[in-house]
Amino acid sequence: MRKMRHHASVLAALSAAALLAGTGAAQAATGVIDVHGHQGEGNITNPKDGQCYNVSDGYNGGRLLVTNKTDRKVKVFVGTDCQGTVAAVVEPGKTYRASESWGPLFYIRSVQAV
Image (cartoon, rainbow, N blue to C red; front, side, top):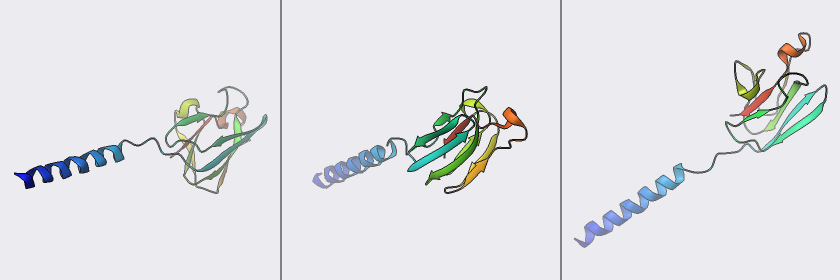
């Protein structure tokens, strides 16, 4: 009987540890996403994985350049709230430039670390 109790308590402790390990806070990328446009520069420091960051008001002042200075990939969207097609996936240490020849149609409006 004593052995069964010991095994049950060990099993319960291991189950609790596994459950707690799986419910951790959202991971964050380490570093900065630099976004540049006609109206200056903006930075997103240590972005959370999967969280969307709007970098323009959705109409004017969209961004033209994203430099990924994080340790994660960054998805770039031309739509606000990370909606629509992904315009690019920017690897760590790389830069993405939106086409300036088509004006506001290709402004960068939101980014997301993944």
